[in-house]
Image 1 (tube, rainbow, N blue to C red):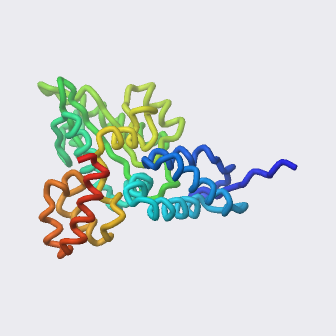
Image 2 (image 1 turned 180 degrees about the horizontal axis):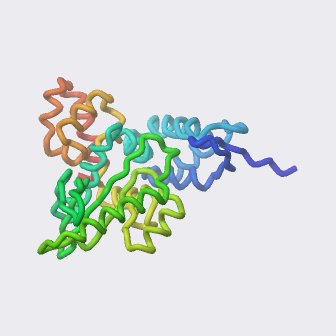
Image 3 (image 1 turned 180 degrees about the vertical axis):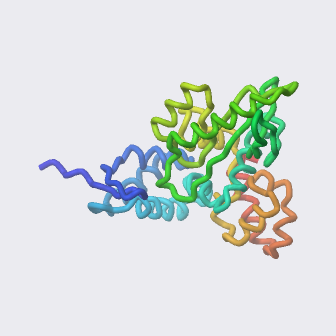
Length: 275
């Protein structure tokens, strides 16, 4: 008799059919070798039950990866690590600005720009090769929340007001960036009016996760060796990337981290960032 499909419960409370392929792909993105991926998929599959939460599946796979190799677990938790940049959203703005800076942009965070009617505070302003980009960031600490069409509608209206103010170098691009996902209507509206939308998995091939992996620019929150308090201390000092910590390792002395543990953390940083 055919085996009945396993139903899983998403963070939103919605039900879905468990996909072995999705689990396998997420494990492969961590850099784990095929033998490790196959072993973890087998263990997780054998422990599934009807209605199991995606959080339980993630936690089990994460624990198994961490046993094998901490660096695999760090990459596997990337999506969760982005949520851990919260709760205010400002570290996410800094993180995005730093990603763009490493892509050759000159960036500013939290600047005001006059519009035809009112002034607007902008999360990120980025300039590169004649492009002048204004970016609004929408950070959600709840993974079940999506950016619906109201978000690009609102941001597009602000952008139009900014373009209504005469200036020598007007912006020529407007982005909406989020750590979660956009609804279909939001994506359709963004395409229609010429907004660039950037989310965890959109656009395909150049999404937030693609950019992070391609550039090796992981947030410090992916570390499996540092405590939450230590990460929050570093974020408060504008250290949002592991690469920054590699350069400014003296911050670990301020935290009173032992030499032995400091060495382990720096080895983790080097492996993740290919340094």
